[in-house]
Image 1: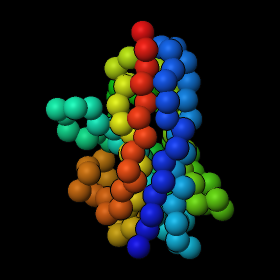
Image 2: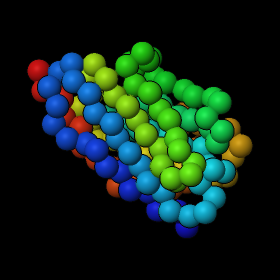
Image 3: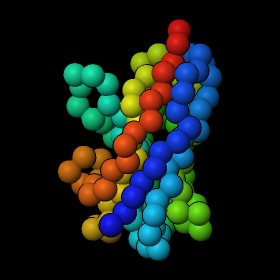
Image 4: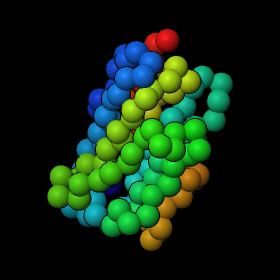
Length: 125
């Protein structure tokens, strides 16, 4: 069983920055691929960033490339999402997810078997 707890969401003006954190329980965090997803009402949950176990491989959605950075600290069982140059369209509930089963990472929700409860990010114009 893996528990994921997100933090760091909040209200920020357009152009500002936030850093989301996701703390994971368990002793094998370094074996998990991790992803950050976001969802707005009426839309499907989308992957904005993902990172493999060793941090060698990462993925970014086109909409966030150059603005968001995913990273992980396996010693702290934590994955981060640094969000810069935020835009109103980045407003969403952000979820972190763990893929404990595969060796790579997925950009699909079905590729992850554990989810946090989400943290709300609101970007005002």
